[in-house]
Image 1 (cartoon, rainbow, N blue to C red):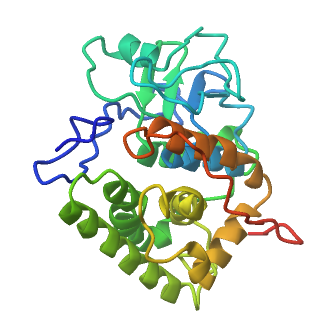
Image 2: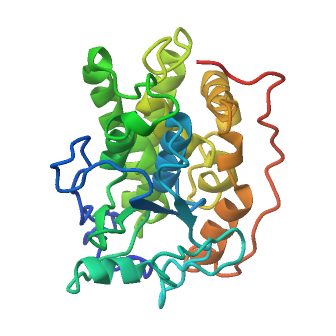
Length: 313
């Protein structure tokens, strides 16, 4: 049985199988590149609700690229007909340079035969009028390295050479069982598919909890992209995934080290402002009407993530 939200992304046994990213070109710090790094040439289209887009929002912030790469936000409510919309309300902000009302317009302009699911984040090139990338994995690396000449924090390296093997290993595990694991549990359409996702999710959380007993961040004292990848799922965990996606063996509160890690990242300068629980909860609870037919949005959980002093790297 297929999930009506994503009919082409389910196997016969009811497992959710996420589609591949459609556009994976690269921005480079070279004037001769197909897509050369430049100030204000590119646009970042994101949802404040989406964890995959949230990774790129945080990377853009921490690298100090807000002035270099203008960002535009879609409405938190995605519908089957129009998909992600630039509604002009609820902090949604249409891009005046393109005039797009719907994100699907950017996809159609890039590939008129595109028939997949329209996703965020998107990096749009205003000169060639096409999507450069809709891969959050690639965009993390692009923002980390390609725009260094324009960054206010050029020395911040989210993918340092000496930690790459460790980062890659953790990324693979966290992506499969945590970042995508919550979706595999939530979008499963059979009991077997659900359980095959939810137990590995908590096995990995247990492993991460143990690892963070002796480590401030995933790579010890060094903050990397892996910490961002983990954070965007965990900050949504109790508010959405625990109940809405039935990932309810334990709450994040049951993991003191993971909870501490989430709080540290949240309190990095500027990060708290990127977390919009209104968008997050309304998107999931109002958009996934097959999971939540009533459309009622929970008022909780009551959680205070602010620490007395900001986190310093």
